[in-house]
Length: 316
Image 1 (tube, one colour):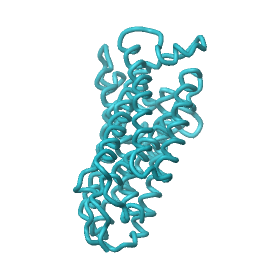
Image 2 (spheres, one colour; image 1 turned 120 degrees about the vertical axis):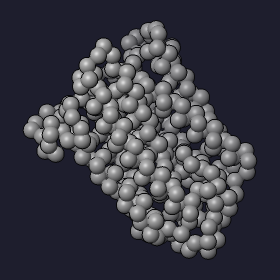
Image 3 (cartoon, one colour; image 1 turned 135 degrees about the vertical axis):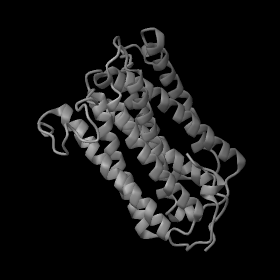
């Protein structure tokens, strides 16, 4: 995420945000959440290879069976929604070029367009390089691109949230944050992003270790061994550390309710969903919602971190 001075430095601009850019960004952010939900559900039910080709699905934008077979519906609806998201992000970049006077915000919008193009490429390579297409004994290439696709999705939504936040009055009226608050912001963003990476490795490799005996110990010390055990342990232990880092950031500085209330609510929901997701192995919806709420937590955190790194009040 870009939280540097280039993104957050105050340029001469109107005190009133551009309503067109603001609502386009927030509408796109809502659409991005739907795209993530569709992609997460596709992974949860292992439907990523419902079609062996890309960008078309069985050579068509309206492939037979996609409205009646759940795996095809999940994958194709994700592709269609993602195409719409890509077009919206390109529109955001274009309109920022035409209407946005702040150089840092324009650059962030251009970076958003770059991330969404990269996201499409990663998703396509995940399909085209799958073992079902290229043969071989392993599937390391496809899984690697799938992990990159999952992680980049989180970065794309987070940057979109920052760009959207830059068009609010809160952003334009922000005061300089103390060094401790900026450090807490970086610490929290880094910790949560690390947990996201571990979670992506788990999901794309289907490493999740389920809690089978109902003990609290197994929630934090998963069963198994080798790399699957390590990824489960790092994800769960990392979540505890990241949770503390988020609380530390939320309680630092002015402790504004607009910061700590959404972060506290999202963190509590996310922890609860994490516990449920490893106790309900046959329910793909809980794991998908866990992914979506995690993205909401990360993007909200990044927006507040960027706000904390603003160099000062915007000049009218």
